[in-house]
Amino acid sequence: MLQFNRKTEYAFLAIEYVARKAEEVPGAVTSTRELSEAYHMPYPLLAKIMQQLSNHGLIKSVQGTKGGYILAKKATNISVADIVEIFDGRVAVADCFKEEKITCPQWDGCHIRDPFYELNMKIYQMLSETSIADLLKKSSAPLYPITVSQKSKEALS
Amino acid sequence: MLQFNRKTEYAFLAIEYVARKAEEVPGAVTSTRELSEAYHMPYPLLAKIMQQLSNHGLIKSVQGTKGGYILAKKATNISVADIVEIFDGRVAVADCFKEEKITCPQWDGCHIRDPFYELNMKIYQMLSETSIADLLKKSSAPLYPITVSQKSKEALS
DNA sequence: GTCATGTAAGACTTGTATAGTCTTATATAT
DNA sequence: ATATATAAGACTATACAAGTCTTACATGAC
Image 1: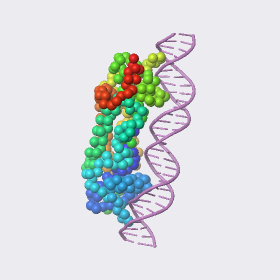
Image 2: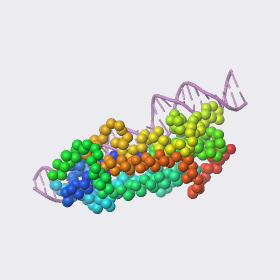
Image 3: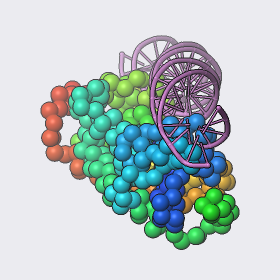
Image 4: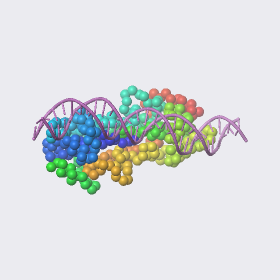
């Protein structure tokens, strides 16, 4: 499947939320509980995802009551590719673009590797050129009926 | 995983081989057996893949002894996206770009759908703009040591 | 005509990675 | 103190991909 796995999707939603909240209310902290309720994500799973994002230096934890997470660096300096690589490993449409040692039984005589490598790099480029700040910008237009946004506004108050 | 599944990879290899062989030896037919040996692909699985490609009108079967498969249309008219869609379904980096009815628990209040939809369409465009003929062109440069190519030449004689 | 070689197709099994759960530990604001 | 928060690892269930097995059918070669 040419598809992000669910952890990656959750991470996108989570980090965009953290960034957006901090933009609306400077200094605001986002708790895992708040996030899991806003997006109906299973709390324990999301908690682990937040820890991984934290371990990789994308967000910082604020411990204790009223704790939560904030961005560890500027939203313009966190790319979609950074997040993908945490949960999906290196961006690669095929195993042979991921591994150091060649294990592919089709490697010898493979005539399609070059064109697909090209494709792979274009996809990677797109992902690494898109930052969390870009997500915030592009999502501004409310093209769809957003029913829960009110709820998240309340959570911010 | 942002990765093609193995059936899709096998299909790429297979259809590129069929196209290349027919280009080198006009009218040549490629049997599943020959393909599975050339690329070390499990025969029964490959056989099913060939049937699916045939059912979807990308290749045509030639039955009986010395039978096999040939392209059903010109290599320029078969896109990589056509093949992906047979084995992976619609090109979609997330479920919400695939389904008709909305089942995503995060749909309401989702702020990242638009930017990722944009990304999705760019990827789809790349896949649908790349034809099997393009694969043949781009793979022409023998950048790597190709040890099995001799074998496939023998198969062609 | 028969036989070998090929495609056609469905049911079944296995393996593996993802998704999610459970448990326990630790930090801190109130 | 205690409630609420993060931290982290081990465990389990499930879904899907991958591959196998079995049987049927078509046709060219002899």
